[in-house]
Length: 436
Image (cartoon, rainbow, N blue to C red; front, side, top):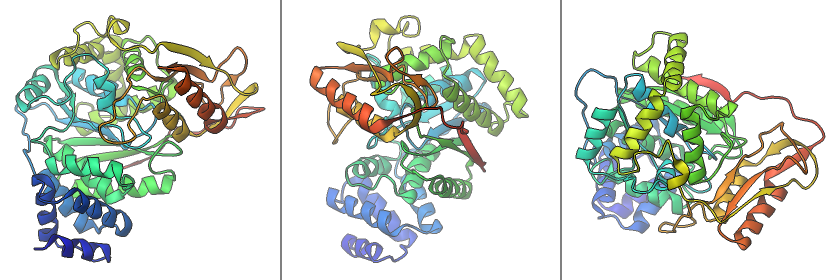
């Protein structure tokens, strides 16, 4: 087979055969395809799309490009995954709650894409935490503690790991077939039995319209089913920050506060409990939503979920007392100050993508691969839609490294991210729909 001929066929809208897809994926994994060829493949798929059969073949090939894990015992192997958003730290809560309820959670997470933050970038804010351990350490952490959140290793879906990085730099992040194959290949390689997908829509999501998110959810459900993986997808609103923080270390702080019960923002709590409920039902750890909700409440109220998180952090190289003393370990910015609105009123609308871009302006994300992230920067105490703001009620609190970046982020936030009205807007649901 000749790479450029296959790429040209896809560019022109042809449906690739499974053997052609296997050939391309093998070249991505062993680096016999150049960066330009990988980028051309991603762009051709983004522009021309893929049939169900093509997407299934791509998912299968990327799964089998490396090791596929198997887990001992009879505990259900479960996970959740989000398509990305602003302030989405639910993985840091859902994984330890599920572990405390009796599941194994081998979570393969990702880094930030575009304006959205990544779970691994949040964990990198924890001193010593190893986001890419060897498989022996990963296996032992999951088996002994019940959960481990890591990035792709060289052994797990290596073709996806390379393609994922190329998507971030070639404007192909939003491609539904590439999202589907990327998510599911990692999850299938991790040996899952059940997966809950948080498919986001809105200004801070890669799918801005709910119908686009619905089509992605349908693709994920269909391809997962064809691969023998039980999957439930929730469509959730990403028209504002999820929780009250956006920025790596600040989101770890909020996740710890959630697990310990110190602070639970209402929308974040709703999404985290809904995702965990669906996972417990998929794994047979609860027979109905009421039983699942009771188990979640017990895991949180007893401190068992917080303990699992603390043990996971320690097992993967982080401090053993992070939960008790997060301020002693997590980086803090030298400039911390409130951002006041241009005029008093109520938060009528938020452009969550603009908030993500403001975090980037503070150094809290990457503009290109290899960029250094400032884990301390971002926003907390973010006012939700409907909140009253004014001279004594800021839009948020800004965490910046220097005055120049603080000023850029403030302008982005005040002028582009938040609209102020005379009255609060009508309430809207955070969870729009459920697909399985």
